[in-house]
Length: 113
Length: 113
Image 1 (cartoon, one colour):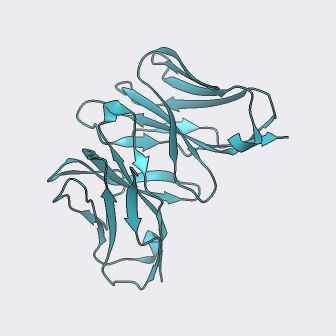
Image 2: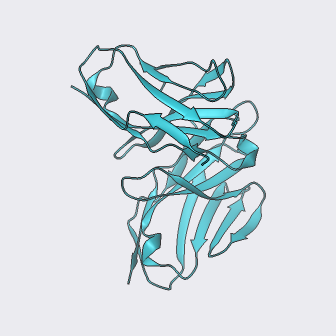
C-alpha cells in the first residue's frame, strides 16, 4: 500500500531532551515536507526537500533540523524541544509539485512539558 | 510575506445544496493550486488540483481558478453530510520553490441533513 509512515503517533517529552520523528514513504517520491498544525494558525511548513541531500527552509524552521540521506526517509529532529513546539506534526511526500500535491502521513502529536 | 487567505467559516449548507469555498493568494507568480479536505483528527487529503485558468471538474467537485484576480474556489455539488470537514486551500509559489506549498487556515464546512 502506497503510504507515508510517521512514528511515533504520540509523544510526550520534557524540555531540552532531543527527539527525532521519523518519516518514510514507499512511493519513490522526490519531494518530502514537514508541517506543523496549530489551532488558529493552520498548517505551516517547517522544512522541505526536493531530493536526496537537497533541503530548504519553510516558513517556521527555527528549532528544527532535517536530513535527507535516502530518498524514502526524511526525519525531523528537535535538538532541544521547548513547550512552544507542542503541536501536531505532519510529514508529506509528492512525486513532484507538478504531479498534484502532497500525500500526508497520519500525524505525530507532540507535547513538550 | 506570501499568504493564502480563506474564510474560516463555519459554512453551513443543507444537504443537496451547492457549497462554495473561496481562497485568495498574494503571490502573482503562483503556479499550482490545491484543495485538501481534512476531517477532524485526521490528516489532510488531496481532493483537487488546478494549474490553468478556468474550471476543472471531478465528480461532484469543481475547482475554479482566476489568476488575474488571484482567486481560486471549490464548488461541491449535491453536498452530503459526509462532506462536513475543513477544506484547505494550498498554493505553490512557483519556480525556485517547487516544494514550498503554502496553506490557508481552512474553511469549516457543515452539511446539515
